[in-house]
Image (cartoon, rainbow, N blue to C red):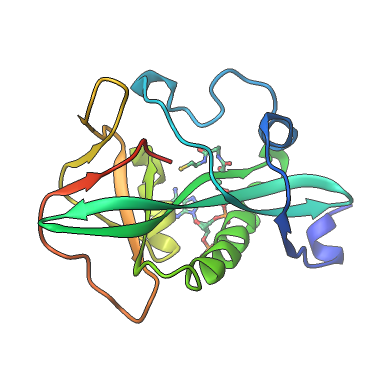
Length: 176
Ligand SMILES: CC(C)(COP(=O)(O)OP(=O)(O)OC[C@H]1O[C@@H](n2cnc3c(N)ncnc32)[C@H](O)[C@@H]1OP(=O)(O)O)[C@@H](O)C(=O)NCCC(=O)NCCS
C-alpha cells in the first residue's frame, strides 16, 4: 500500500536522535551522506525534526545555532544538517516537508540566515526548496584549524528576504 496516499505524514519534534535513529532511516552503511571523503569532523545537531510512517522513522532534519563571522561581523546562523529520507520513500516530498517544519522553527531561533553544506549534486534539489548557493569560500573549524569547506555552501533567509552580507565567511565551529 502507498502510505502517503492514505494519510499525509506529519512532522514531529524528536526528543532523541542518535546513531540508532539515523540507522533506522538510512541503514547501517558506512557513509550514508556520501561525505566521508571530505575527512571532516562534524557536529551533532541540537533540535531534531522527523517524520514517522506507521511508527517507523523515515525522515529527519537537524538544526544547530552556530557562531560565524561574515566580514568584520560576528553573528550566528542556524545550521541545517542531517537531512535524510529513507531510500524506499524518497521522491515523495518528505525532505521538503521535514525541512519546511525545521525552518519554521529556525525562524523562532533568532539568526537571520540558515546555512547548510551539501554535495554538489544536491544543489538543484535545495535550490528547488528555496536555498541559494553561497558562491565563495567558507572556512570551517577542524582540529587542525580552519579549512575551506569542500562541499557546496547554501543559505536561506529566515526573516523577510534578508540578503547574505558581503565579506569573508568563517564558521567559528566545526560544521554541522
Ligand atoms: C537528499 C534527500 C534527503 C532527498 O529526499 P526526498 O524525500 O527524496 O526529497 P523530496 O522528495 O522532498 O524532494 C525535494 C524537492 O527536490 C526536487 N528534486 C529532487 N531531485 C532533484 C534534482 N536532482 N534536481 C532538482 N530538483 C530535485 C523534488 O522534485 C522536490 O521538489 P518538489 O517538491 O517541488 O517536487 C534523500 O535523497 C536522502 O536522504 N539522501 C541521502 C542522505 C543525503 O545525502 N542527505 C543530504 C545531506 S545535505
